[in-house]
Length: 198
Image 1 (cartoon, rainbow, N blue to C red):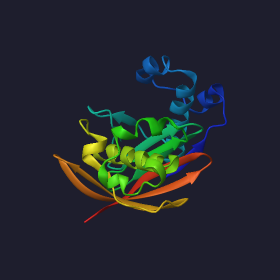
Image 2 (cartoon, one colour):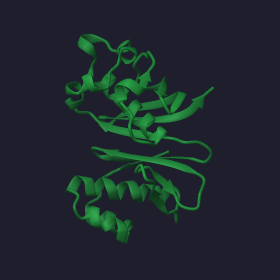
Image 3 (cartoon, rainbow, N blue to C red):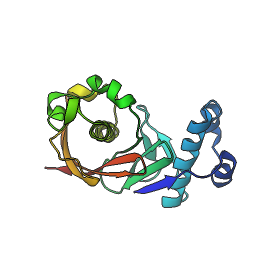
Image 4 (cartoon, rainbow, N blue to C red):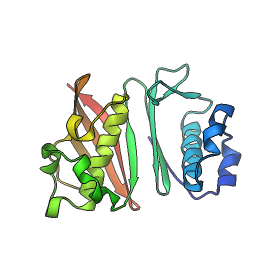
């Protein structure tokens, strides 16, 4: 797992990664911040696993060409993040602190998730952690048609600066119990799949 703090300009990152022909048609349409995120995530991936080629499947999930290793990436605010697992599906999410999450909590918080919420239906860090966990599980599952409220649940936890938590995917096409790790740092939270439990 790796994190890249984005301090470079777009020009500096372009010296480290040149978008391939098939990437240019959407890269050129991105706004400035998304272009930085795109470049930083690919520079980080190439730093961690040089010379690897990445493609996307029919669901938009990235995968390594000619490798059985699995990967996931994310970016938000001033960071990009990548996780690589040699023998199992994985997922990672990074979120910059934003109160937008409090306005959409009704779309993803279910009764199981709500058991971990404190004052007035949850504080910012609790909500961001649950959202990040569900984003990671969504990437782990890797297919569409996932309802964050109905199909993904985070089991009760006590909020810390960094720790693990347990969660469940209960989708008609997958049931999984997962252990996730998380870390709050520099006005961001990162959440990632650590392992699938029996």
